[in-house]
Length: 233
Ligand SMILES: [Zn+2]
Image (spheres, rainbow, N blue to C red):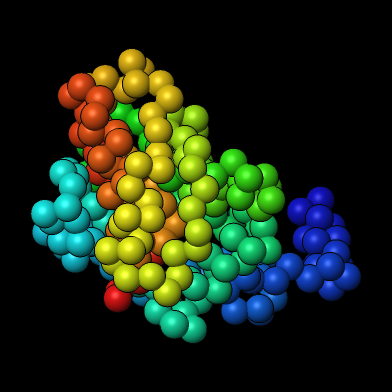
């Protein structure tokens, strides 16, 4: 039966080849969404095991965070960039879930998630989420949750104010552009919790900073931060 099934599987993959979103090569039978080679060459930062790492340093003197890390470097032309692009602009959500679960496993086994009570994805403005059809940070959060069991709170933080695109702005301009754009919607349920804030790409950190400052208004809350990629400025 297994042989028959494999034959059928091979036949179907000839008709409908499954392609890796990182490199465009055909996926093998035992591969899913991202091929083994792409998984190996992703330039992982390892920051979750390095206290005081560059992502944490990015927030020093700006906002109080407990810990911060990023899965990969966001290099020009890199496969992780291609993967995140396919997630955001081609709507291939499996990429977010897959990368989220890969990262979630590393975060969990390193102890980075010890003490984390809830996961909150960085929200998109409703109109942006509607036009894209989803929030990529939410998909990544669900991937992390799938291997850690930590609950994701999707509506705890909202983004009622629409901002202009962040590209070509200085750090100060970006900061003033995002300050006060996030609102906490269910403060009571977050009292005393350690929250893991999840984003797709960290660049200047202004968006995260605005989220953290809003969350820290709640009694006894502490915040840690992770993203799939870190773009070194
Ligand atoms: Zn690949």
